[in-house]
Image 1 (cartoon, rainbow, N blue to C red):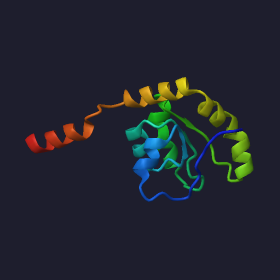
Image 2: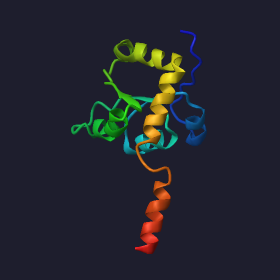
Image 3: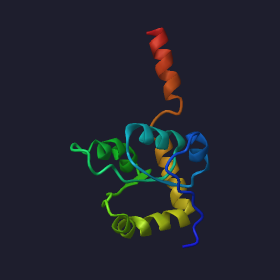
Image 4: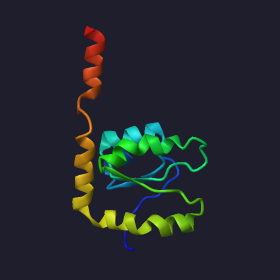
Length: 125
């Protein structure tokens, strides 16, 4: 499809990867969802399919609901998963305007200074 991409199983300094990413395909563990939100990276979440309670779907919920991310299903077979979601991902890669709308939606979810507000509240009571 002529799309430049980096696929890697592990990155030591993830902040550089999030900063360089146009979009991401990721699991929806709490830490990953927080990183996606903090960096406003348009993402296709494919929750881990073997969790009995499917909590990763819930983790991704706020970002999906606001329009900042998509929720897909890991069909366990890579070919089937690509067939199910590849077209959506390619359209996202080709559409900078849509990615920007997704970033704006995530940034609108909460205060940009949320950590500072929590710290101040804890210190001042």
